[in-house]
Length: 183
Image (cartoon, rainbow, N blue to C red; front, side):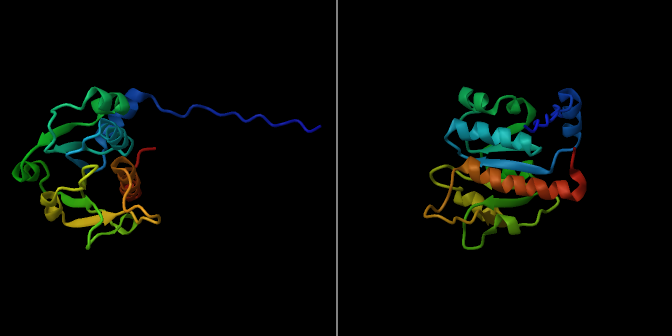
């Protein structure tokens, strides 16, 4: 009988304190703009996603609460403490918060391109829409580009946190390939 070989796996996670210092000094120039999201689980997942993709911050567009709900914080785990966030309610405030930033809508439109064809600018704000109504038309008209996920089934869209995960990982990958990567 042949003896099975044992594999030695080691925990490769770095020291969290040192890693946080490196991350804060080298974030990808990405801001997520969350348009009137209703579901705390989606907000929490987008914080976790933002932390995983090393984004600079999250902006809440016209959202009622000034703080993520208890459920959002629970889903986000420690990511709420890792990602700066702010609330804006006017286009002027959004423009002041995002000067010299390329605004991109994650929305299927007559001018949108598949997310995998999008080429990153120097910095970007990715607008993601409400779970029921999609992106606010006011934000959509401000976006310089629109990207979408091709849908191969009957549905025309997927959950906002899922769609943002697919697109944001691709965007973060492009920034990493430009030399902004931490190992």
